Image 1: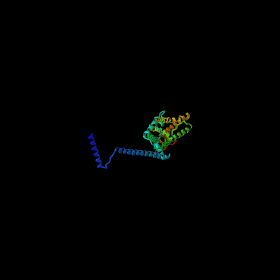
Image 2 (image 1 turned 90 degrees about the horizontal axis):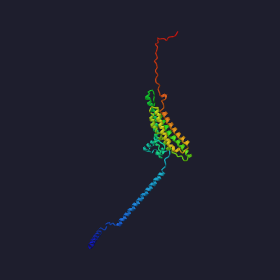
Image 3 (image 1 turned 135 degrees about the horizontal axis):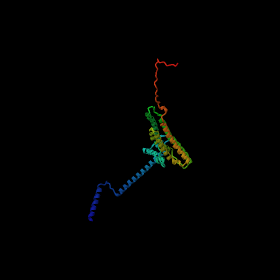
Image 4 (image 1 turned 90 degrees about the vertical axis):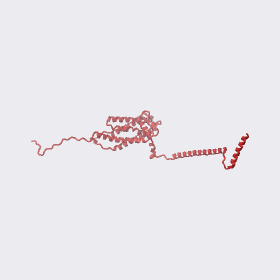
Length: 310
């Protein structure tokens, strides 16, 4: 015990001598460490709280800017820009849905999903008008190759006629249908209603099936052309009927049947008009009549006088 006490005394004495020699040396204690840790914790906590407050302020500013940002006008390009914001997969999905209609399959609910677009209907109508005009001219070219007596001249006016007919049908008919359904909604409270853009979208995608059909009409077989036309009309009109039925079934049976019949009739008139105008039989002025064989006239010599009867 005496030896241990002696060693402790010498160690304490060495420490005392060391502190005396270096009086400016820093000394730390457990209390100082705790004080510094608490100080750091307070600084970090205050920093976190300040960052959260800054984030909340930025969110508030962003929401206020969004609320203060004016909505685009109806006649501006920015208003319609959102209706062209679709990707290729969505357009292909909607095209496939229009080609495969079946009962119970609502095109608006299963494919549009409250996000109608104008990109697909716009380019479908443009493609259909262009294909109609080109194939209508190609029909005359192929007919001229089969029969050289047929005279062909390019008919560029068919592009204008096809564009006007297709776009007027794809916009005016949905507008009239939407207006009628909106009027009937006032009389029938339980009757639902599609928006105008959803109606335009349904009609636009329903015309896609006619694009390959018009190309197949180049086959110079009349009964085969009519068969392709009937099949395309059946698929397209069935898609319209299956989509409109959930809306019109709440109305009276007479109104529902009459409305769906008019929709199918107008669709059939469009297909029939395209078939008869762009693929009509050749008019007579395009056919050059074949030269008729004439016998050469025999000239009598001047010395020979005609005989006179006595």
